[in-house]
Length: 150
Image (cartoon, rainbow, N blue to C red; front, side, top):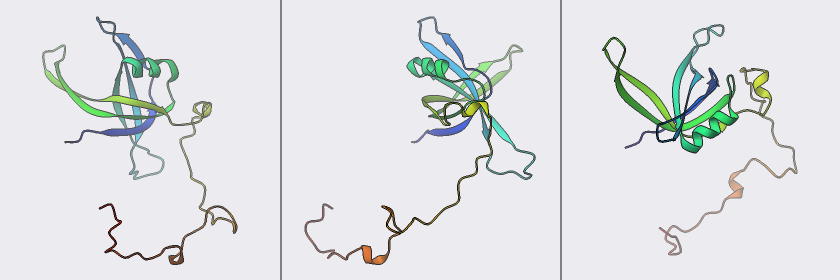
């Protein structure tokens, strides 16, 4: 079975670092992740996803990340059941982060520019180390050759 989540978004607030009674570090934060589909360019929609990280990852996040920063998170989705203050049963969904990465340049968070437009594709100059391949770059081999590893 597979339970893997990979997300990129902006922190909605500074991460909150706490310690369990056994002195294990835990940090919680929320990522605002833009949706791919937008009915209208002026009305962007986002999902707000709760993230929790433990131990060294928690300490790393608390030390280096702050509100508004673009981050990438790898982890797994976890659910937990609890009772709210009125006694109603609730289920919480969160991502338990295994890795948290910087997703922008060091001071780019101050600008808060989320309208990334990739540069247009340009054909490489002749004589450069990269070139578009053609069929002449490949050679046929005999499939009955016994040197194949499979």
